[in-house]
View 1 (tube, helix red, strand yellow):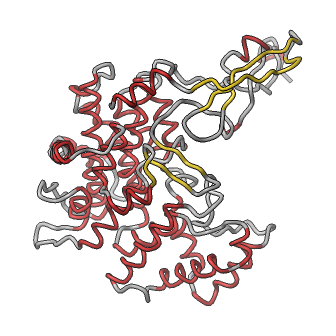
View 2 (view 1 turned 180 degrees about the vertical axis):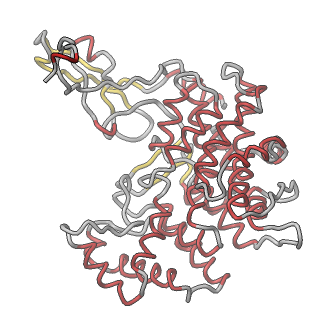
View 3 (view 1 turned 180 degrees about the horizontal axis):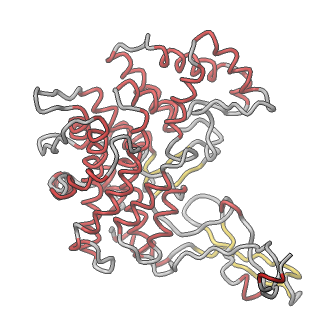
Length: 446
C-alpha cells in the first residue's frame, strides 16, 4: 500500500454539507444527515444515524442507490462511458500495460517500477502449481459437470491445502493468499476444462507469461509440442485486463459480504465464483453464444431484430447495452478491435455463428433504434466471439471471467479487511409476512 493510499484511508470521504430530513419517523423531529464527497463521482448522504434518529430504515432493492463501502480501487462513470483502475483510464492500461502489471496496480495502488514488476511476476509465476492432491480432488466430479461448479468446489477447498495463508489478521499471509489465488486460478480453470474433455492435466510453465501459460495449459497435450499464438495470447491478456475489476458488482459485493464475517480468502473467492456463475452476471457472454445459436441463420437476423424492437416480445439481444454504462462500454471499444484481429488471424470470418455476430454488430452500430437507446455491443458480446474463435467452449467462458476477476475480488477483499469502518454485512428488510400469532395444535387446525 502506498503512503498516498494510507493517507486517503485515514482521511476517508470528506464531509461537504448536511441535508435535513424533516418530520421523519415517530419523533416527527428533523434530522440532519452529513453529505460526503469522494475524489470523483456523486456525493452521498451518510445514513448511518438514520435509524437511531428516526426509527426508520431505507428501502433499496438491489442496492442501486446505496454505497456499501468506501473504495479507492475502481471508478465507473456510466454516463461518460469511463472506467478507471486506481485513476488510470482502462484504454491506457489496455494499450500500454499487461495483466500482471494491472494486478500489481489493483493490489498496491500504484504501477510497479521495473524491479517491483519483475519480483511480482516471479512471485506469482512460482505459485501457479497446485498441491498434487488437488488433482485427485477432481475425481469426485462427474465428467459433464459445469466448469463453474468444479471451480466453486476446488477454489473453496484450497483453504484445506494452504493453512499457512488463511489468517486474515496477518498482512503477510493475506499477501501470500492473494498471490496464490491470482496464480492458481488459471491452472484450476484449465484443469476443469481438461477434466471435462478427458485429457490429462497440463502443468504450468514458468517460462511463459500469464496469458501464454493459461492458453498452454488449456490446449497443449503431452504427445506433441504446442506453440502459443502471440496474437491469441495478447487477446487473452487484454480480456483479463478488461475484466479485472468493475467496482461493486454482484460477485465483488458477495466477496466483500463473505469476507466481512472473517471468512478466509479462498472461501470468499469461491463465493464470488458462485455469484459470477449467474447468467445475469458472468454468464452474459455465454448467453451471447446461446442467442447466436437461436438465431441460427444469417437469413433470420431481420426477424430477430424486429423481435428485439417489439416491447411485447420477451426476446432480447444479448450482449448489447449495459446496466451501468449509458454510453459505449469503454471496454467494448477496445475489445472490438481485438476481436477483428483474432478473426483475421484465425481466418474464421465464414464460421456461421461468427458471421451472424458480425452482422448484428453492424446493425447495432447503424440502426437508429439501437443508437438512440445506447444499445451498443458491450464487452460480453465481443469476448464471447473471441473465446469461441479461440476454441474455448461456451461452458468455460465464465471460468475465464473468474480468472480475470480474481485480482479484483482479492484487492477489494484486502481493502475491506484493512478498513476500520467496515462491519459484518447485515442488510435490513421490510417484513411483509404474517403478524404475531399463536401456535395451534394439529387437531384444531382447519
